Amino acid sequence: MSLWEIFLLAVALGTDSFSLCVGLGMGKIKRKEIIALSLTVLVYHIVMPILGWFAGDLTGRFLGKVATYIGGAILIYLGYKMIRHGISQEEELPHVTYNLVGLLLIGLSVSMDALSVGFTLGTVKVNLWFVALITGIVAGVMTLSGLLLGRRVSKVLGERAQIVGGLILLLIAGKLIFRG
Image 1 (cartoon, rainbow, N blue to C red):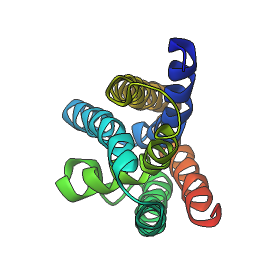
Image 2: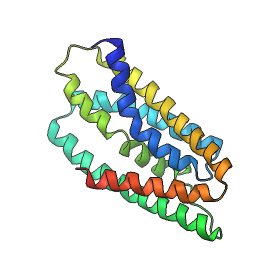
Image 3: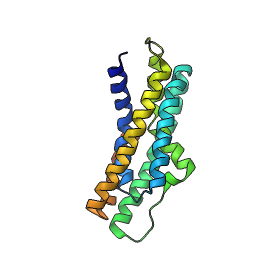
């Protein structure tokens, strides 16, 4: 694989995280949470291809389904809460990203494709560690970019941004749950 192909692969793997994080960024996410989530996704996108390389296809499919459904359920909950808060503006938004378990589950849910890629990297002559590092860095930057973009949009749209962000999260949850 050329460097260009590795970069394109990394961008493709980071798109789920980017789109999810635009929605999350429209909620009232703190700087500390932005950094924590970006680093979590970065680490997952380094580790998952390596695990995929060593793990069997059956294990990957099982973990993929479980993580996808858990991640989808979390996104439905977050989306609902954001929409409800945007409409009523009475209750406090949940900060799942601040919670360690929430961070890990969100990171896992957007990194399952990287696990699958790890399975296929075993068939291609490539430096796995280099590909995993590039994938992680690109996914981390895309996560950070999505969160910051969502935050900026939130400032422009005000409280309505939470409704938009909630709808984005619900759409992504639907994609996660119903795509496979």
